[in-house]
Length: 420
Image (cartoon, rainbow, N blue to C red):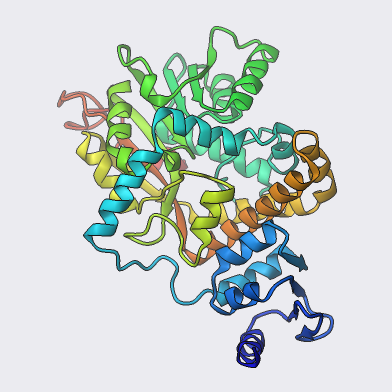
């Protein structure tokens, strides 16, 4: 035990903010007035901390075995220093690749995907509304200028996507994984298009249906409770966006997913895939137990691919990638904005969760989301995860179509139109 305490004291001495540890027997290690205090109910949690298993500590906090005092930003500064080595480095060989693919196939049937989406997104609409922007855009914002608020940056993101897609009035637009309808509503109100969105979340479906009626957009905007595998492919869409959705598809299904997207897109059309990508080339989740924590408490079935693998999967289906943009630090700032907003309203958040869960369940969910938002913000800052917007076309085969000979689409093959 003395050896463990010495190891913990040595770790505490090298941390970027003062940290104190309350031991199970009641004694305290660390400075008085520490920025962060962790109180452990049993000795196993201390061994986990000494080993740098951040995900296990997060689970102990979620389950009430560890108590936390201090700001989430300070806690994450500590967590980043405790991680041993790189959490995105992988030495896995062919057997682990085969095992991951087998597990991926098993975890991503239409039924399981619906259950997993509802596990996360149907927690409580009011809970999400506490810390999202007024449009409830639950994906990486775009801070076009450093002084933007979260709400302004989310609207800038919506426009950034549509400028890239060259969206025009009268076009048919599909949003795969439409969330609470922010992208759909923006497209209909600012671009005058015919818009269809799909989701597997019952709460999001009901919410967007109400929005459509309130805004008088019936006939121009529709929301469907539908799996992407069930979409009608007979009449192609001019433009397609998938924002924060393909993380739920599963690596084993990625080829089928992009193949379906290609068939849904008319020849010459444009598709934007906006989603989280892995920081390491071979890993599908962040190590040190952090990916396990996310899978258990937040996003069951979630899988990440490195952008190089995503580009390969898209190319194999016949989509031509024409633009790729990394927005990683934008997502770090977005997540910190969400985290700060939740931390400022913890009591209210718990009251909302208690209306749909019992007291224990509400506390458990709230603790998990506090760590999830702040931990993901840290992960994006560190480069352990990333965020890419990938723009692609379905070439129409006509050498004369488009602005340049051989373009075979409406894409201008320059970025001037995005930033002008």
